[in-house]
Image (cartoon, rainbow, N blue to C red; front, side, top):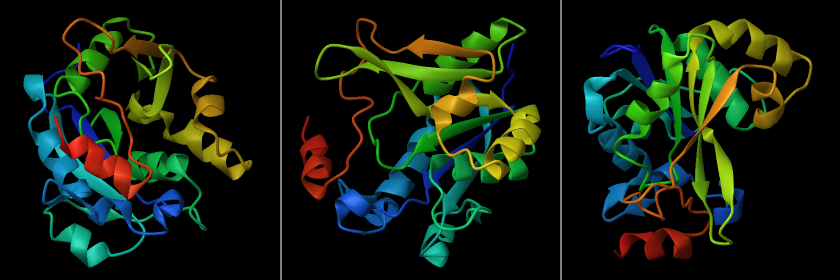
Length: 207
């Protein structure tokens, strides 16, 4: 069983923001608050008290991110290598037994995210817990940037990325990954809606 404060949460804000016109996504406002700060505050509100430390993975505007009050670490891989680069940075810096990754562009993610992913580790062979959710077409799909993982996976991820691997699913497939569905009664159907355009971001501001 994962105990209180045994999880470090990492906010992934290191992307190019290409589909949003190249802007820094984490600095775009959601209901008047920068997305990355909103994400940080939502992580602090997580049920169960499992999250201890918080970190941000960002590759620009570092001083602005640091002003949010959590350590900020850029990718150790070059050239905006994608979410796995953020995973790698987080595992390198993590000082707790578990790392939770959350993107900065999905502002309505569940307040019981950490708690429900942590339950997957009641099975001792679990290495990664990954969220899944129902999408607009009615199908349930994995949400691979929402992962809770053992910090011991650092060596595996170093080897995978050094060999040129960049796809999350190909790396998680190497490990005992449990998919945790977030499609239960009462779950917000917009919880895992990520915002790739400013219009999508503003649409999520309205209930």
